Length: 402
View 1 (tube, rainbow, N blue to C red):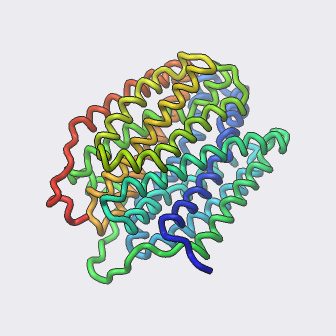
View 2: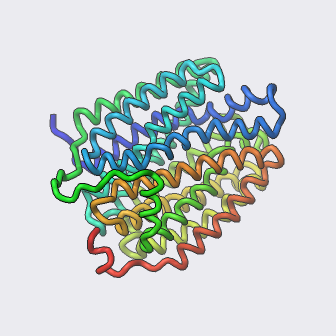
View 3: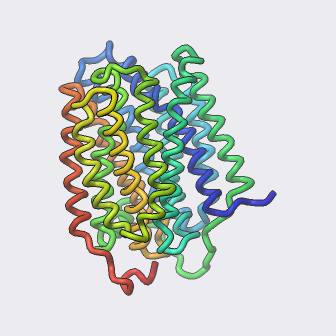
């Protein structure tokens, strides 16, 4: 069997990964709220809702740097294989999840599997030159966007087919994960050159983070990445609730709004970014993207369908499409070549920590008012915007090692 080019192969791997993950999104927030609403006071129900979303990120945070380090030593492909098998297990568990503990167990397994994203980013770094990295990271972002474009509507349809139960949803997710596993086995080439010299000692998650933050080229990028993810997690963890309570939309209609975000983000990352990066550079795109995203998040619960909601979704899609791949490209270029997997694992952990704290805080604030999580998110976006404005690209001599 003739294998596709590495960039195409990792694109398809991430796409299948995201389809498996995103197909359950329409169900999780509403199902957990239904399980907690009548059994707990409103504030506690909000915290439990947030924790259910956060356990995914707790698991991701716990293992992401270790997966990055392991992939630096033994290669990217074996790590992707194991995590993809974990995705199959998580999906099957979700198919039969009728209680909060079962949903938590499924989310933990899925979080461990999703910790492979840093490995996928390291794969991109292995097979691309620094000047082409933003475009290639944009391919990963496009895979994200397409996954979120088709996964949630398929999930909403499968919920109807399953009469509101997660059985069909879970098995469809498992099918995508299984196809991905087979694709990695037969079609994904290894990207990591096995070099016997310089074996990096194993270090813990905290040590890896401290080492990354001690590098002045990396620290500002990692901090702005963390805060932006923390702000954005407010939308990710409450948007279906906003659709139900503020917009008075069905799950399918709310999903359509998120499809707009996914389509715009995918077009930005897969096409427009290729034109913008050579002309303006990653840093200018990061600044512009954050400038656009902050006000858009702030106004989410303040508008009504349809035109203002769609315009806000377009703005968020453009902003996230500009910033995501550009930040990751800057991080991969600033990191020393021999620890790219480790550094990408640290970024994965930072994103996970943001998605641990964000949903818990956002859901607790949402119980007070749907406006509060988005007011906080819009205000928080000032921090990465300020950091991006102050950041200066390293001189070529400083990043020669990358």
